[in-house]
Length: 351
Image (cartoon, rainbow, N blue to C red; front, top):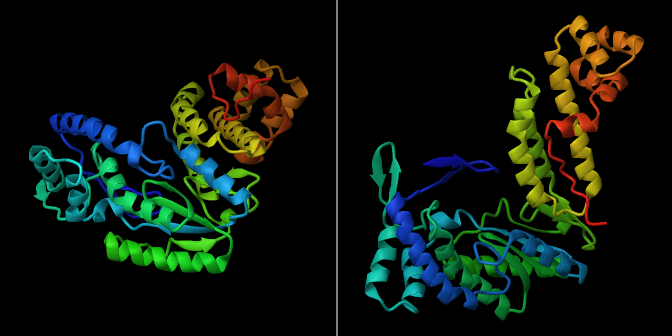
């Protein structure tokens, strides 16, 4: 099974059957309890009690301390390139039960179903199963230990790894030496096109960018663009369904997005996005009203004075511009959408 990746290309999934998922989950619970306490404190991905928000906050602290050059490592297809022999040697160092080792090896070698045929795999941890992220963490723990041994300040979330240094020259040295380590020791490849030594504002980490002085974490431009594309798809003016259904379709995405990106420190961006979403919905409704008579009737029903409603309803202006017309905005105020269940993106903090 293949799914598109946000930055292009595809991600191959090897989703196990129900029985295999159950067995993998059982193995994961036992091994994770044994391993997790020995993993690096700088590793945040797929670990109990740890999150992407913690990784971003720690990165922000490093930058605020003056480590304001980031070595942004993009590891190319880590889940697809993990060397089975290297991985199994790490597992065998702590697991003595040969039945468990044989079971893990069987999961790794299970292959992928493509076009009705099983394609064998000789490397990688099949994505889609509960055990795969944990096994990748075992391999990448070698990277964490090496970075810690060298005294670097870094944050890693799965295959996203950022190292923070004080100068561009130091960053170039670190990039070169760590690339050699990954290639020679772990047989992993750094994607040179997507990796860089740069100032934090110019890079994204887990969907966020951080000010060069560490004062503020922001939503990365690509994440904002992806959000707007998704909202445009849901509020496409030709869908032909009522506004209540549009909001019902949109709400789960907004709530999930808010739960993650609400961690930013730029409330103005969130309020601007809220206003933009409401304007998209006004444009959708204005098109549904179709003609001047219907628009005049609806504006009057929503409390707009006769003259103002007549001027707005008879305007030849395009849909997007009309969604910002004073009469339309006054008729479809914020509380109108609140009453329909449209979630807010900016949640006020405690008083």
